Amino acid sequence: MSYADKIFVQNIKDILENGYSDENLEVRPHWEDGTPAHTIKKFCIVNRYDLQKEFPIITVRKTFFKSCIDELLWIWQKKSNKISELKSKIWDSWADENGTIGKAYGYQLGVKHKYKEGEFDQVDRVLYDLKNNPQSRRIMTNIFVHQDLHEMGLYPCAYSVTFNVSGDTLNCILNQRSQDMLTANNWNVVQYAVLQHMMAQVSGLKVGEFVHVIADAHIYDRHIPIVKEIIEREQFEAPKFVMNKDVKNFYDFTVDDFQLIDYKATPLDKPVEVAI
Image 1 (tube, rainbow, N blue to C red):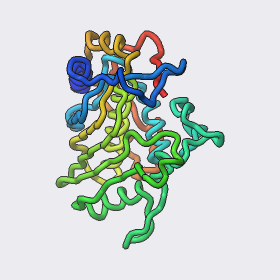
Image 2 (tube, rainbow, N blue to C red):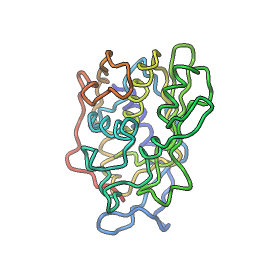
Image 3 (tube, one colour):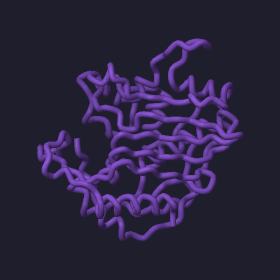
Image 4 (tube, rainbow, N blue to C red):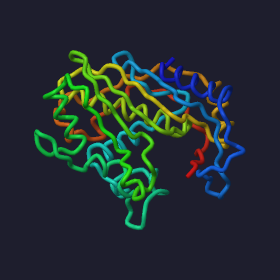
């Protein structure tokens, strides 16, 4: 079975069995019909994946690999906030009248800052340091920018990434303030595992450990029956991850440069309602 399956099922079982319910509290999220979207949650889940051993995609429910990468490139490569530049519709609910998500996600990664070596945005600073200062303990990004929160369609969930090099190996920590476990957990894991592979390749490094820290890992009330059914599903072997080895420039990657070989997963029977 996939190691990612083992971790995912372990997490959701723990939340259901030992989590805290906010059913008696007033909550911000709601369903499309206006009903409050309550959750059961666990505080601070930490998951570790060795990317040299296996690509961390689950098989107990299908993760849409190409759509994950399309959004990843939209944020990290295009540094965009325009939903028209994204193939999926996942950000439509948070778009403003101008068709953007405001000063969120990709916008923040594209803001330039002054350093002693010159001006860089956050992505280019990471790329510069991985090649020129790999021993640095300061290689990180942070898009939870307080002075701009009022101009964001949604406060960033996956908000900070720390890159750390040990010898010729690139390790990574993703910090996430909030995680809808059913709809977004493996989506984010897949995205940042791919990002780590990309950063490593263009920097002449090998991938190492990917660590995912989730402050509030939750399951929404209307997702509980689906989650219980997923726990009992058959689990399959992890697929092989393949990336175009000829790409040496981070900005040259396209969605077509990534593929999974022998990815076997069980799709959900019907679309999952998303809280907003």
